[in-house]
Image (tube, rainbow, N blue to C red; front, side, top):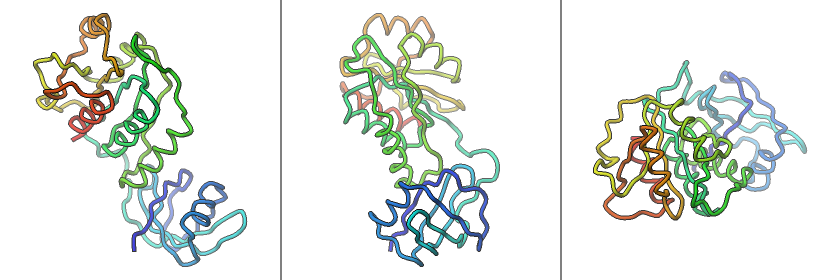
Length: 239
């Protein structure tokens, strides 16, 4: 029987036999009404601070639930072991496609997404509540311990300086580049990649990339949709 994983933000260090009580309404609803948890049933709790542990449900109340720590599965012992951290500067695209990019970026271990508004961006708002739900569910499904973050939306101009200040090297997806993203030597601690909107980056934006020493990288031999380009770039750079 599959043991379900749940991201629990406020758990601190627990040892086998210790009890944890939660009053988080969403979690209680999910366990009681969606998964139909019963006393004695086991689950996996995790977060980026304590790692991953197996817990057993020992009490169900109207407004709280109690669990007992059974054993540690993975323990965080200072620092993380991610060799390369990838940030995705993603032009805002229509809802369902942006949702897909967020979900797959979580699964691929991307550090964070920075939504950007470019010349050809059609929409400029995001439903952060929905995106946070997607991130949490994808984290629980994928076996990842930390929650990927989605930063506040920034303009294209502001994103150039931000990306250079926070990363060792920055790329932008370009069908015309001679260098393919597959050939990039992933030796840097922090890498960022820009992906354009449905209509691609404008000529002026490409000139600004070059002027800012942000390097073009070809993502494939064909023209890719924005969401496909994002997933391809994340997949290659996160390996």
